[in-house]
Structures are given as structure tokens and as C-alpha cells.
Length: 196
Image (cartoon, rainbow, N blue to C red; front, side, top):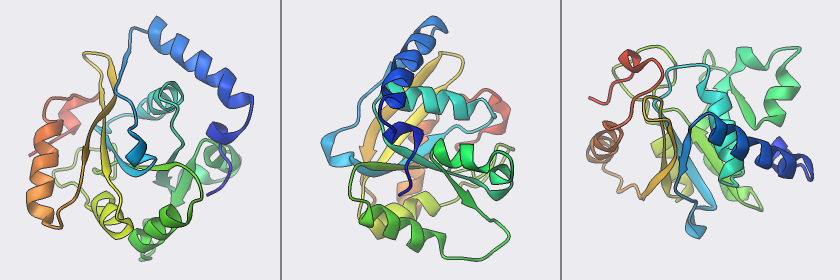
């Protein structure tokens, strides 16, 4: 995995302090912590309904001492912001090409020689969507890693890590259980998030 703001010495320490202070001043509560067995894991990022989700995710990642990488549409990695987005932990995804993203992501997670958490929004978009994409699920299954149910709730100003979820291979039952957990959270644009 490439070097990011979270693995850059001194910078990461300073920004952790800034993030903790900013979240506290803004009235946000950071919940949970990453268990040792989830040093390598796949994070669900939900609800994902606003561009504001990225900065809050970055602040929370510093506060929780995570080593996150996240997937974003390829267009936000174009010049002049591409280098910055990658340094922030971004991995560009070209939605127009049919490549085996699941296998490539799982292989990268397995090959990483240190802690790494791959953040994947199951909706795949900030727009309203009825169906969740299952890519995060199959990445975890393929890499044999746990899923961390990370959450953000704008009305209550909560951000953090929920329980670990170990996929059983029964995708329909597992997705139903995951969605039930997320029913308690509301995004910034809550009408765009569905857990049905």
C-alpha cells in the first residue's frame, strides 16, 4: 500500500491532535476502538450521503489511530488533486471498466505488511440508492478478514466503530443483518440512505 497522511511521521501525530480537538469543539463523539484482530480489515462506511463524510471520516480515523485506505471514483483523482487524494488514503476506482476489484483489493490487503483498513461505502454513491453493493462483503470473504461496521450519525453527532462482523458466506442473510444494524444511523442527507 502507498504512503499516506496516516503513515507520515510527525504529520500524523500533529493531525491526530488537531482532529481530536476539532471533533470535540464541533460537538462530535468518537465511539469504539479497533480490536487487535481487525488491524487488517474491511470497513463499511455508512451512511454515505454527503461530501462532508470524507473530512469527518479522516478526522475520526486520526482520532481512532487507524491506517485507512478508501475507494473513490476515478474522477476525483484527476489533476490537480490526484496526489493529494492518494496521500489522504484514496484508491481510484474506474467504474466504467470491468476489472476484478474484489480480487485485487483482497490481494492488496493480504500482501500489506502492516495494519491496513479498507473503507468501502456499500451504497457506492452519495445519491439515493435502494440496493447496497456487496463488494465490501466479497473483499472481506476473499481476504478472510473481518468487517468493521463503522458509522456516522449526523443528528446525534456520533462517529466511530461498531462491532466486528464475520461473513458466513450466506450473503443474503449477512447483508440483512448488517442493514438492520445500520437502521439506527442517519446521514447528513438522511432521505438518501436506505437500509431496507
